[in-house]
Length: 116
View 1 (cartoon, rainbow, N blue to C red):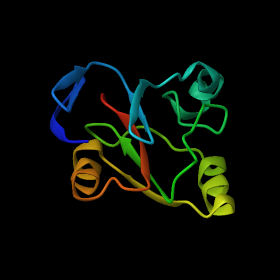
View 2: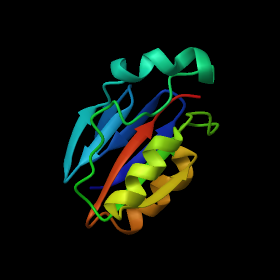
View 3: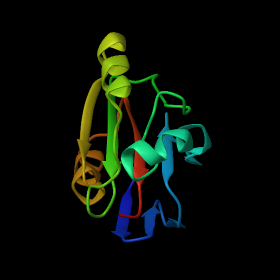
View 4: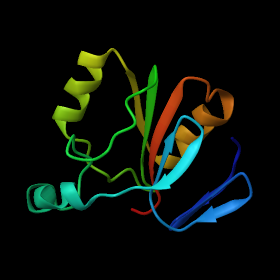
């Protein structure tokens, strides 16, 4: 999987442009379904990443891109669940974590926020 380009509001992966948050799960790309996390929005000022979502846990490393400006909140429960499952978390602004993904995607899944 190759990450060609990222800018506010879109990401280009393997030549295809996605204008929504994406989940990379064992080589498959799907749209992030954040509906289950919306109930936490008021507490965070933004819909956070919560354990209520379908997080791609079947990996050794989970990369979470927090957006162009790093504003996607990651709830503590996600961090605890990753620790419990012995999954290494890499959390940072999407443009920075893409560099990690371009270097090594083997046994790595990701959730990439493409705005804010």
